[in-house]
Length: 251
Image 1 (cartoon, rainbow, N blue to C red):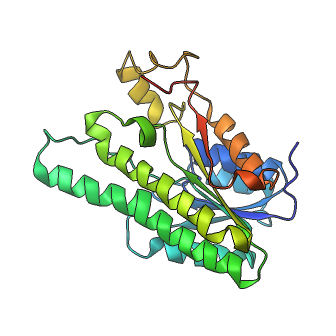
Image 2 (cartoon, one colour):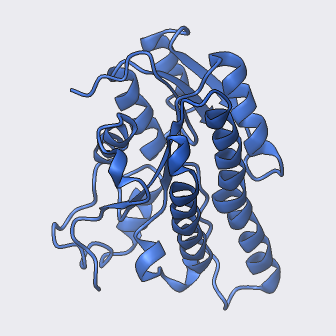
């Protein structure tokens, strides 16, 4: 069992899916966790009740708004004093392709880029400055996707492009700040059985046909990998991408 006692982490998009599963894994490992949520609290209140307000703090923020990322990190610092690591999980994935009306295409590209890339970059910037301030370093785990490497369906090309940007951002952070004790990792899931993705899988009978394991990953598996990376047991893997896709690489 990984022991994260005495550590504090910010998890974005922690009200459901991968974010909620990750937050729960970190809490069971002894960490304090700041739970970010946007439109609905989801599992946030349940985790607060289970683990107590001394170990759980929730912050609402709409990462679709400019400056929300920096403000969210500052709110985490205001509560915790020091944040040891950040898990950038929050993302949006509307469906619109070239055949849709331009107004929808335009709106979705701007929103996806703001939430999935710019807000994450702002959070990473704030984390780097925070980690450097006391010279103790820190951990960054950014959620990308299988789509960053093999593309996605036409109605999700904005999502795939944003996740490719996440990979480049994270590798740049790893290279640029290794000397400062800052470690940055990419976790790239394929199909994960979350509340958002399950209906998509159900509506596409062939969705899992290119997954050799034949099933979507449970979100807890993603959380377990993230907890391992945050533990500091793999410092020299900084900059690496950990795939969680049931061996679905090439189709």
